[in-house]
Every structure is written in structure tokens, then in C-alpha cells.
Image 1 (cartoon, chains in turn red, purple):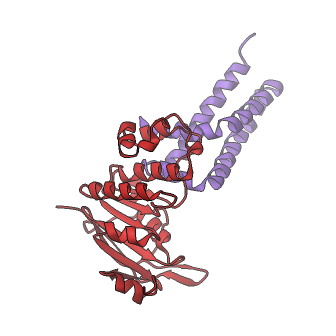
Image 2 (image 1 turned 180 degrees about the vertical axis):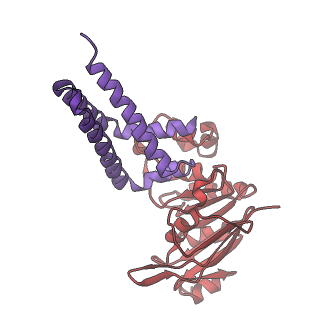
Length: 219
Length: 99
């Protein structure tokens, strides 16, 4: 039986404006969950809350109904791809992969663009290569759940396509939570979807609901 | 083992400024005697913490590289201070080696 991650009772405000106030989300291993929302609706904030680095007094995160305060502090529970680069620029790509216990050959086999780049420092990679390597490291990490904040940024269409294939394979052993403005791509891989709107989470089952909430325009 | 490597990766970013502080502190003790050791010791602790603070401020997102490996902030920074103080003591010993 898979693991279930539940989050609710989240209240967070910035400058007295409630960003998140009524959240209920459920994530399962074996599935991909897409989170949509306009800029400033709290998607990245929510990811940091789930990961545990943004500590709140009012929140409830449970894994299999067992309350967990800071998931990132526990080994093998969670991985998180932040929006910005997180791998130190002065280390080589192969060193970064080694620290995360990822076989460089596996990365090259999935993305031949990395052939010959293993000895390059991270800061010398292009924006797309950097993002792709980081996303791969988190996606392949041994964890029950991984949170991907804008994984498709800077990536070429073919790389996005390949990454989606890897996500579909990886979901067999973990739960993947993803947010990105390339909503078509997120929708394509997601088994369940949520939209953040006015501080609340809404379960989404079809594209029309995204239109109703004003996230996308009617065609 | 990979966690230890990750900690040394963090320390490598601070190696130059912390080593300069170690050399200054060791030089002071060497020049003015052991009576200033306590001051030099606290100078080292404080400057290392300040360097960690600024490094963390300017490379805010890099902390996730360590978090994702299960290395907590306290463990990371505690290890850095420990490594740095060991290096400081070694430099101090070198300063007092008979020529």
C-alpha cells in the first residue's frame, strides 16, 4: 500500500493579507499531483510549508495520518526543487550527482546533452542544462514525495517531453507534486490537480474549471 | 560519506575568508603571547559565524542542496565551525613550531 501525504489547516498572511487560509490537499505515492495558481497565490510558499522549511504555527502535515512537523529533517521523506538554482555553482556536475547518489551514465543516457559536461562546473552550464540537472537530481532522489517548483523553466520542448516520461516512470515509487505555469504539460502528466485561488485550494478535474477560476482564458 | 563531502563543499566556499581570519588570529597570539588567546579564540568564532551568515544570505537557495541530503542547518553550520576551529588550532600550532 502506498503512502499518503495530507496537508490542511494552513494559515499564512503577508502584510496582513491572507495568502493561504483554507487548504486541504492529499497526495499519494504512485501519482503525480499538479498545483495551479496565478502569480502570488502562494504555490511556492505552499511547497516550502510542505517541505518544512517555512515553519508555521498553524499547519497540519501528516504522512499516513502521522503528524510530521518538518519533513525535510527526516531522511528519505521528501525532496524539493526550489524555483531558483540550488546546486552550488563552484562544484562539478559529476560531484553534484555523486552527492545525490545518481549515476552520471544514467543522466547521459536520458539526456545526451550532458555527454562531455560531467567535469564542467555547475556555474558554467547553460540555464537549461543547470535546471535540467537539478530537476533530475530531485526527481531521482530516494524519497517518498518530491516537490517540483517550476521544473520546466528554461527547458527545451524535447527536454520537457523526456522529463515528463521520467516523471511517469518515477511515480511508481514516489509521489510527485508539481507546479509550473506550463499548465498543458502539468495537466498531461497529472493524475490529480488542485488550483489555488484566493487562499483556498480547489480540486480540479477538467480544464473548464481552470477557465471558471480565471486561471486561463476561454479559447 | 556523501553527507561529509557535502559539508566540505560548503566549507570550500568559506575557506579563503576563514583562513585569513585564522592567520590574523594566530599572528596576534604569536606576536603578543598566549595572554591574547581568549580574544583570538572569540574573534575566530565570531568572524566564522559572520562569514557563514553572509554566505547564507547571498546564497540563500543553496541551502536546499544540503536540506535535500537530509543535512539540517544546525548540523551544517555546527560542522563548519568545528572544522574551522580545528584548522585554526593547526595553524596556531604551525606558528609556534620551533624554526
